[in-house]
Image (cartoon, rainbow, N blue to C red; front, side, top):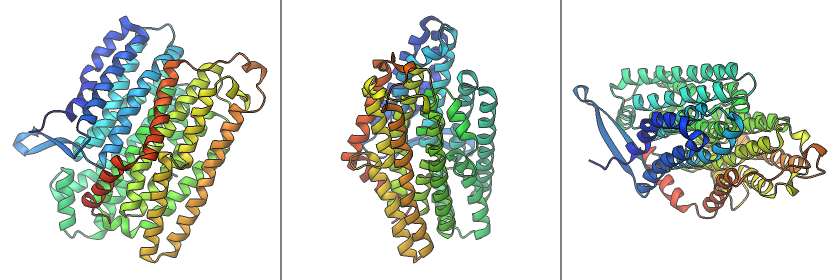
Length: 495
């Protein structure tokens, strides 16, 4: 029996959330430091066993032989690290931001941080789960606290938008549940590894496989907010409290991609091989649509929301290659996007706090007033663009290399054309990213912004930490990449 390391990482925030809620009445906004300490513990537990594959198994329903577990391997490690690190640093960032948002209502701080801990635990549990039912429970646990966080502390028509978010993502979850029930009916198992083995050694009718795979794919792609299933995302990201936007986009939506890779692709490789071209085309259109919509936005949070749609297109594009290079690139891109977009959403929050504005057209010339904010914004966008020495360069190179290799191996000229068009779509990221930096930080300073000052040290420190990480991974990706590619080859049987 392994030491209970990973279960601590997941359950500690859940168990201590009520204590944080009660402590908030006395500690006010300072209770954020308690939430930060709890998440530091979870992150430390993950780092403690990050050096090799690590599995914990626990008996859940002994009479049925039903076990659950938590697994950290090369595939789940980038996701778990991204969630743990972002949740931890954004807890610190939340302290000044939510003080600005909540103000003199001390009773609300405990509620916010308790829900925040549950949200983080749900995401972490989902990517470490070894059982389909366990995965689904954590997948839904992400939804409830995030819905309440948007409905209570969001902006604009926050209650209506929170309900839209809940409805769309719950419909996706129901499609996923239907596919899980079908998989159990076919295999009689819910363990992810057992189901994978049974399905790969059993020749089931392709129509049945396609039906189960389609339902599962829809369930995950709603969470990813790909084109056609994206309606909820621009509203939710724009109107959520900015620290929650900084978790929704960089951490949560990519868990849909994790589900596609860990579960759907490993269960139904024939389906993904047969429909590789349509999936690649869907991914390209998502990249294109998100990028074009980002170019047309004046609201900085809405711009970042559409950027996230485009970036999830990249992730799906790599998956469509159905090979080791492209799929590994998608997983690394989740981490890279998390770092870059985490920086940018927190920057958006600093701009809102310091200027009381979200309209890009009403900003300008802020680099002289906020030099660290300006530099961090540039680093965030350069990570999304994929500049060499940032983590985004490696992930995008692997994604497009994987799709091109797949098209050449299959002799599909159509897929090769889509891959080339996808490369051209990256120009949109450079377009909206650099144009945003130009409009916000350069030019003349409007009179109403002449007294603006740099963000607080507490708000900037998490941003600087993520900026450093993107260069560390970009320059030295081997510790993550070596384990990742090995796991993708062995676990998913991809070459």
